[in-house]
Length: 335
Image (cartoon, rainbow, N blue to C red; front, top):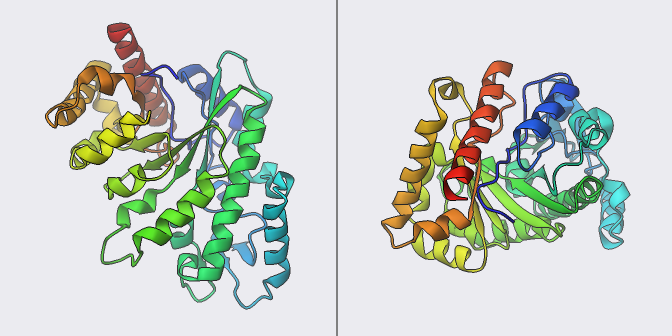
């Protein structure tokens, strides 16, 4: 893949999928299908990929797993689908993903790359609880089932996206990895890696992980991802704390998606020129650890720091315009 291409995290604040898809196709080098959480609670990133998970209940803008139900029949159906790689079992319904369905139907045919995203098992498992508000991730049976469930969701989505372009990128979105290692989240490294690798194994194209906060980057860099996506506007210096892991990642062909454009109101006061300078400063943190700028540029992608679903429409459009502008400026500068 060429370096310095633009892509996005996914969510946009529209309620109508048409303008959201138009923006995604027009602004990005690697079009990214839009999640539309303001259109419906069903497009909340935790609800969106929940269909047919055993015991899942969505009511009154709350999602939880009802452990009082007999989950065995649904668990059996999930495991049979997993063992048979039955991707139709994992299909997203249009009411859960209007942006995806409109995106699939509106292909201008100008891109050889397409990007999608699925919520990661750590974040889903920490946010979604049972009826007693115990996170699913702390239930070994449900956590294992969840990873297989999300793997099927990722595989089905990738199959659909390949109708639009021959080459796919799928990000596993893990915002709650920023809590890993904190006193509030009791998680060991190996189980987290096992859950993530289960989902990643269902992705045949390029696979990435997106975390929009500070985390133990050594853990994410040790997975089988091809792309690490981070909020480089706020946390670029934290990545530079792991030079050995970053070096090994780049050596095996990994790429870094630099979220250098703030996905917030700060974007209204930023310029392309200022963000290009900020990008160079982020690279400089790694250059100070012995990395060569040319190597970093050759492995760089450009994106917003996070999703834009909670923003005003005009702010989200500004974020996307800046992302396109920064990528274009860097492409013109470095060829």
